[in-house]
Length: 123
Image (cartoon, rainbow, N blue to C red; front, side):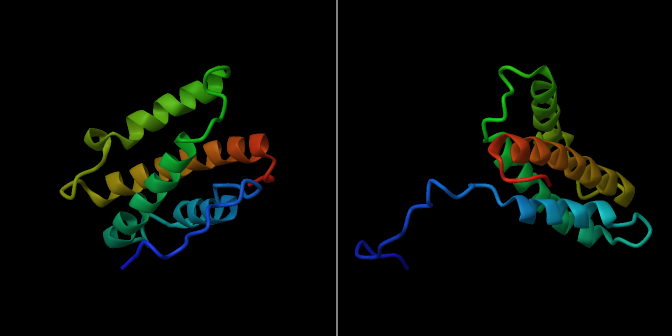
């Protein structure tokens, strides 16, 4: 339980707010999962993590106002993470699998743009 007396350090301005390596590893794991060897439980576990990474990247200034390619990626991402677009629990495992891969691919593309624009390296 937090108290008023506890001190929390604010993140350093010099530190990147996005963990490029973590997101890169997470998308790599998702993209290396095989349809025939992944359980629905594994897919359902990995997908919200990827959506969280994608939402973090959507909150960053990646130049969507000036770059039509980035703007198109943002539009695709918002359509993809819409709750109505996500596979339900009744959807076949392959539908959930391909949705997870689409989220991972789009996250990876936005991560690459983030890494290039923030100077945090290539992912």
